[in-house]
Length: 128
Image 1: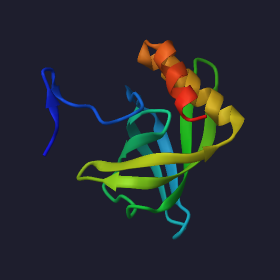
Image 2: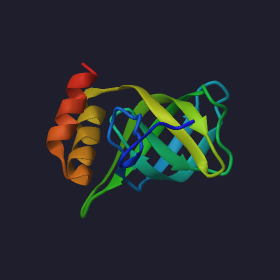
Image 3: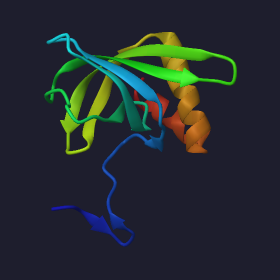
Image 4: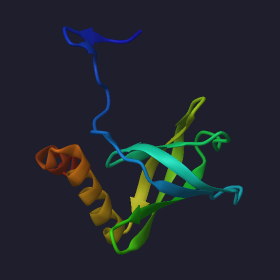
């Protein structure tokens, strides 16, 4: 049963999710299977949700490549993660590790799309 307050269901997530649509390539590190060109729905400091008709099993370790396009360039960056949950539309992936460049890109995506960079800074402090 969900918990409620006067505003409705209580949000249990510790990290703000922001709408973010981009192309992703995901590789299941156990099986080697690759899902290419799936689209994301939202992203946070700790994970991303992507649409797919054939999600990997929950718990599968994954390599996640995010595709960013600018006005004059295309950028890919890679994170390591695992499948946290699946549903009829796709799967939620948690981030386990990333290099410094990927972290900076992720932070900038969240700064730009959240409209609340201070909250993102507070969340970064939670994970350190």
